Image: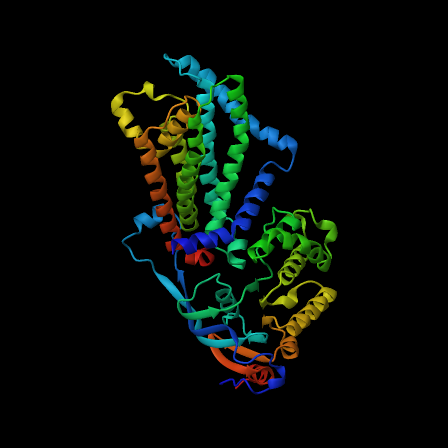
Length: 257
Length: 259
C-alpha cells in the first residue's frame, strides 16, 4: 500500500523531509552447518567448500521515514524487525540496497546500549555519552539527571556487574534518552522496568514527539503502537507487507486473511 | 580519503581517551597500592634477569641494569598491547552488537592503555638513570619519535590480531607462543655480541630488535641512531600498520554477525 503524506496533515510537522530512507533493502544471513572457528580448521578446510544455509531476514524494504514522526513496526517473531533496526544503527550491513540516514541515530536494542559490566555506572554513562557524540563536559552535566531518572543516584560508583538486570536496563534506557537523541530506535522498550518506570518512559517519549524527535518503535504491544504511532509498518518473514495508517495496519495484522 | 579517515579518528579522540583511561585505572584497581604494586613487576623481572645474566656474560655490557630495564619496559609494552587487543573486540560483544562507532577505536584505546602503563613504569627507569648518573645528550630528542614508531607498529600488529581473533579462536594461543619465542628472539636481556655474525644478519630483520637498539643508543649511550636502522624501522612500522588496517577493513563489516 502506498502511503500518501497528506492523509492527516495536522500530525505532520514538516513535509517531504526524510531523515531515513531505505531502498530495496535486503539482508541475507549465512548460517554455516558447521562453524570453522580455528585457524587450523580454516587452513585444512581451505579447499573444501563450507556448506551453509541462507536465511533471508529482510526482503526489499523501501521506506522513507520523515523527520519528527513516530513510526511503529510490528510483526511476528523472526519477521526482521530487529534486523531492520540493526541495519539502521549501522551494526550490521545490508546485503544489498541502500540506506540513507541524515541525523544521529540512538539505538536501544535488545534492552541494552552496550554497557561494560566491569565499569561503574558513572563510567558507563560517560563512555556511552561520548560514543553518542557529546563532549566530556556535556555528559558530566547530564550524569546526575540520568541517574536520577533511573532512580539509581545512590549507585553512581557501583560496578554494573553488581546491578540487577532491571537496574541495568533502567540505566541503559535513561542514558539513551538523555543524550539529546535525534532519531531513537526502540526495540521492545516496554519490557523496561516496572509500571512506574514504564509510565515515566512513555511520558518521556510523548515529550520527544512534541519536540520533533524521530522515533521508530518496535513492539508487540499493539495498544501502545496504536496510541503513539501515526504510521506503522507490518513485516512478515522479512517482507514489507503493509505500510500505512496504524489502525489499518493493525487491523490487517490481527484479522487473518 | 586518508584525511577523512584521520579526521574521523580525531573526532573520536575523547572516546579513545576515556576508554584507555578507565581501563588504566581499572588495572590498578583504583588504588595507590595498586600503582606501586604494578611497579614491582618490572623490578622483579629486572632483578632476576640481572642476577642470571650479569654472571653468565663474559664481556659486561655498559650500564647493564638500565640496558635490561629498557628492554623489559619496551618488550612488555608490545606484549601487553597485543595481548589485550586480542580480546578487545572478541570479548566485547555487548558493545559491538548494540551501538555503532568505528571498531578500531577499541584497539587504539587498548594500545593507548598499554602505552600509559609503560610510561608509568618508566618512572623507575628515570630513577635508575639518576642513580647511575647516566649522562644525557641531545640525542634523547629522538626518543618520542621512536616511541611513536613503536606505537604505530604495535597498533598494526594488534589490529590484525584483534580482527583475526574474532574469526579464529586459536589465534590467542598461537600468539602467546609467538610472544614467548619473540622474547628470546629480541635482544631484551643480551647484547648482540653474544652471537656469531651470521645470526646477527637474521636478527637485524626483527623490527622490535631495531627499535630497542635505537632507543638504547639515544638514551643510554648518547649515540645518534644508525640511519639505516631508523629508515628500516620507519618503513616497517607503516607497512605493518597498513597491513593491519587492510585485514581489519576487510573483516570488520561482519563483526556483529560473527560474535
